[in-house]
Length: 160
Image (cartoon, rainbow, N blue to C red; front, top):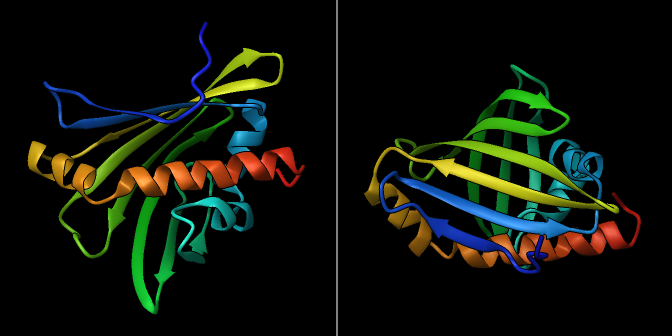
């Protein structure tokens, strides 16, 4: 199986979904922790130019979350619900409060590749192709790649 070194971002032509795939030198447990521990999550999520403040975080099946990303004095708020949290996957909703009618259903899966490597697959299903394409034009690719690079450094440094 080839190693996915950079995040592959794909838009399905038939369903309004974005699929992101990336391999990490980490165990599934480490990636789960990075996505469910609020202090760790705030350190890596998003582009380098932002800081993240967690306002609410209850990472369990039936829990919810809310965080604020700050860039140059501008705040962007996000919230959602954890539908399911288990060792190999997280299912959650994701809403950018600047576009409250565009709610995504996200499924993150952690595939153990062996040898301390895990493939993260994140699928975001939105309401329409228009919403999906707006996400793709939003600069999300930069935030995803810079965030995952920070996460890789945290894993390498033993922080996760």
